[in-house]
Length: 113
Length: 111
Image (cartoon, rainbow over all chains, first blue to last red):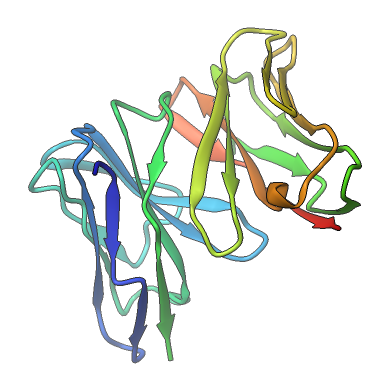
């Protein structure tokens, strides 16, 4: 069953802690993306990667970090430097680049208190 | 910066009524994609439009891409309760390899 998995679905952390969100795909897609969704603001791009061991900042990369050591995996770390980390985080992939349709994972809802 | 504006932000219709959401870009788009997100779910790809003036249909859904490739619309005929959710447009800008999402239109359907 091909697709994108994100875990966990819900995550709770205390302020000041780093937290890593998992994203795995078995679609053999080259490109992967991380978005943040807040109510009424649509999807904002955090980071994207078009190839293993390479990634680029999106529009709101401050306070986040990523790695792409394997084609299938693109974990996102929300650091303590991110001022408003509470949000719904969506991972996506596409066969090559942003010109192609994106397949989204189920998302992780992060709450930081 | 590059922006994709989407209106309305919210629409509440009676079941059976039509619904339309509009997207406008500040720059010419290479293509436009449409996604639907059900409440509590994740965005799911609906369609991609590439050509100037293109019109595509999926059952009760009609998608249009403007002649100047700066605007697009999604029209749903005779809405059903299964249509509820948020509809996003996303414009692909070839320069910078960037997909920019609109803020989405939330559709609620009263039965």
